[in-house]
Every structure is written in structure tokens, then in C-alpha cells.
Image 1 (spheres, rainbow, N blue to C red):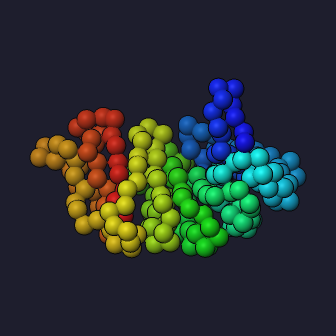
Image 2 (cartoon, helix red, strand yellow):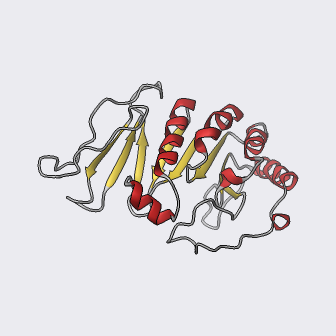
Image 3 (spheres, one colour):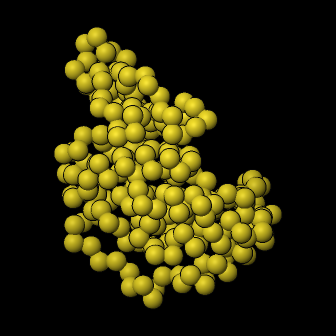
Length: 219
């Protein structure tokens, strides 16, 4: 069983699958970015061996990260292998959500339990400027797909922490409450548009009234 120098049991491991990303967030990297050659990254066989070794010494949870881990073609197979590894009880994923709409269902079928999704703004134009070319609708479609697949999803922002909560045991049944700022009587951004699935954002402390803002995604 692994312990740190303070004698705390460490059973949670993050594994970076790539340094590559399909966005170029202004706070993260330059637009013209050179990533490592593929042969400098751990191969799938090396990753499978390491996952087995970590499971054997006492690690219980693995989270795949990047860069952007959904760019790794073997991601679904690696999730499946990790969940079949003795000792490993849960596998999570940190992603920007751009490719999640098509990957959520196969990842859930492979055994993925949870998704941590980075989201800096709900304004499409601000999102495009921050990421340089990203589309907010693609990320929100990924959140909808995660909910439909039964994944626990936690949106998070570098500037404003976000948490996810489930309003019903069925992820296909979103909350019908309207998203409102705590100062909705005077705030021009009191209500935010709903996503295609009907799920809504609520902002108890929106940026115009009481920064820093906090957002919650209600399935």
C-alpha cells in the first residue's frame, strides 16, 4: 500500500496520456504549439503494464488526463483495461469536452465512472476567444451526452469553480428549475438559456452582481 512522507495512504493516480490538445487556450499555450513526437510518449503496452503494477501496490482509482486525453485513439481500450485490472476500482477522465459527445457512451460502456470537464465561460464568443477556436455548443453537447450515458460530470473553471449535482437518479430527467442569479431582481443575466436536453445553469453569484461567480450544472 503506497504512503507519502506524511504517512497518508495514496490510492489515487493521474496518468497523462498525451501533451497534445485540440484547443489553444490563451492561459495555457501559444497558438503555434509543437507537441512531443508520439514515440516519446508511453506506448499502450507500457501504460497497461504500469496500470497493472499500480493496481498491485494499492492504487484504487485512476484518472486519465492530458493534454487532452480524448485525442488518444486507444482511450476507450485503456479505460476498459484499467477497469479489468485487479485492484482498480474506479476510472475517471479530465477533458475539455470537445469530443465527449461521441465518446461518452463508449467510455461509459468501457467502465468510466466520472468526468471532470474544464469550462471557462458560458458565453460562446468569450469561449471562442479564450480557446482561440473552440465551440461552446460542442462542449455542452458533450455534457448532455455524459448525462445521457450515466457519467458523473463535474464542470470546472479556472476562474470560477463549478460543481455538478444530480437532481434525479435518472440523468435523462433534468431539473426544470430556472437558472437564476442570487440578485435576479436587479441582474440582467438572471436567467441563462437551457441546453438541448433541458438542463439549466444556475448562478447564485453571477459575475455582474457578486464575483467570483459559481455555476452549477443541474441534470
